[in-house]
Image (cartoon, rainbow over all chains, first blue to last red; front, top):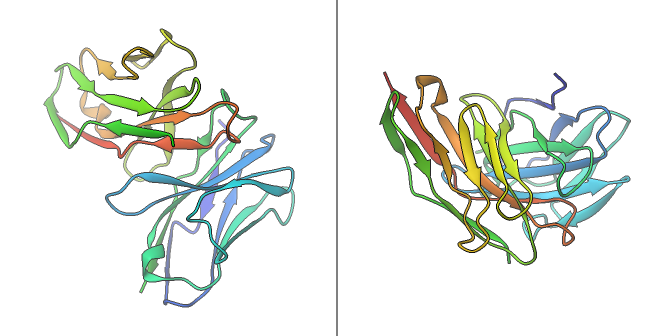
Length: 114
Length: 114
């Protein structure tokens, strides 16, 4: 069964450093998403991406965050200057369409900012 | 804004016990409702969904009915197994107002003992 893959599974970084989290969505999907879950809290929406541009973003997704689909397969989340409070599990998801279409999630990348 | 509230966890049951995890929501319009499950070390997987009022989603012995009048989508299973131990997330997607972003509840940890 097709799956969403995320790398790395765990990323440790120093505060102020840039990190790039990588995702390979399911190949025929058109909509891509990033979510995050701070330990003990809810899974929160960060951003959705369609047709090579951001379609929606949350208030969490400030200027420190960016997303890119650099080629036909990868979908990346960049944090320019990490803060301690960016430590969380980051999930990538993709779907064929919106609304009733199912979102398929990757296993997540655990980001630890020291 | 949209929100989802799940019952507090963790929930600990013996094998073959009856399971209920409560979920209520607040949303504008007519959202689609989902239950996702996360097994240890894995990503979120769709367990079941319902897209309109009175729909019943079902999968692997789990069921949930979309109750518009009580704005609820409680998850039930008649006889749980040890393999059902996981974290369960209730979520909604508000049609027509976003590019399919999911709003999650806080998750409920279920542990089933033999």
